Length: 513
Ligand SMILES: CC(=O)SCCNC(=O)CCNC(=O)[C@H](O)C(C)(C)COP(=O)(O)OP(=O)(O)OC[C@H]1O[C@@H](n2cnc3c(N)ncnc32)[C@H](O)[C@@H]1OP(=O)(O)O
Ligand SMILES: CC(C)C(=O)C(=O)O
Image 1 (cartoon, protein in one colour):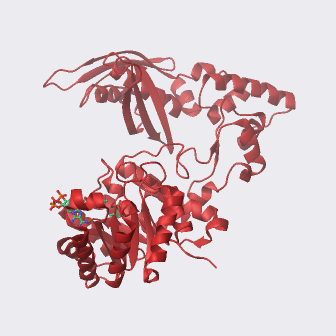
Image 2 (cartoon, rainbow, N blue to C red):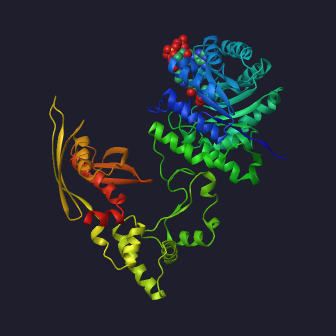
């Protein structure tokens, strides 16, 4: 017999506690609608008492979300709890989540309260909240580092006051899976009225174990709610990631034997929305939602996946919202993947020896070019030279001017194939002016998703600057990298390198007239 695992999403509350991830009311509302499409059971919409803006965000979400329960966090005091109740008034299903720290460290140093005072405040707050809302979650903050006897007294008391969910946070990500699982089990076994509440886990990722700890809390401890965030966003190193925990439980149903209400095909759209809204880009090798999570670049894997995809895939890309898995052709690819791509492109070669000859040319090109486009392959089998096209856009010279009180300007000369462009523009800064100058000639309309600068040598001011830009155009996202001691020059190189990747054969032909 299986039972249900409740997915409590806290992207809009703990996720927003990531430095730099603050969201407006409308952004939160948009994400909440996506979380509802994802069918999460509970959406923690914010901390209503923290600001008027967050109060309005929680209220707006409570007013429109119908299927998921909408929750607000509140400290264990009447003011915070009343504010949460007020914001949640319009909700179809509302939950107040109140918390107070129970570890000796937090009680003494932060709250400056005795354990008996904390126990009393927890009890009174849950009683107060329960009079305003039927669904009450209580969290002993820093619960995992709390004295177990004291924690049992607090939890028993709040259950008696009507708490319906008990959430045991590993607030600072200190737990180890087996120990955390046993900790939850001990609490459940020792508290006489423990079965009156649903047990929940809330793990932080300071040691990279948030997902593992949460799953141990479920498997060993018997928790039936997991608190998590899209892309693992959250305070410091983040929270347990929703996509990982959900796909672990779904993929290993043989082990967990739990039902989920989640529509997993909405995972990738949710991940993209959160990344775009917060500007926290998902690393390519991130499980489930990273760009490479279902991409195969090496010949032996590609061959296996083409013969039977489960040789190297434990989940289907389509099941989490990708359109398909990917075979990325490059220098590590083999003959079978190359042959399959030719077939997909409708290219028919007459003989095995023709295929072999094309494959040799392909490998040679792949050694010189990191990404091989379909147009490159078509050119290659058509015996066209593609090597000259590898660097279609090239920076020839650059000068820029910036002076206090004046609008910076840049003069850029660059080649697009055989054509030399001279472009001049002004911008908010010298980099902005440079990129605007290039765009003034090319008018690609590519959207700049990311711009970052790193020092790649000693870290002193004499270092080489390495600039990365990420562009999006026509459904493709590409990175360009450029290095130079002058970061404006590095920026121009990075931008042109990204444009080279976006540049398709059709555009090349058009540009060459
Ligand atoms: C582990 C977690 O993630 S907990 C959630 C963390 N999230 C946030 O803090 C985001 C929202 N927070 C805020 O906007 C503000 O901190 C507010 C509005 C809640 C409080 O602001 P302020 O009144 O200015 O207090 P400030 O933040 O400086 O200090 C926190 C106060 O709350 C007390 N406090 C902390 N936790 C609790 C609690 N669970 N229950 C009751 N009181 C608490 C602290 O002891 C401190 O009290 P003091 O002012 O008497 O020393
Ligand atoms: C408020 C609680 C659940 C929390 O976020 C934590 O302890 O990390």
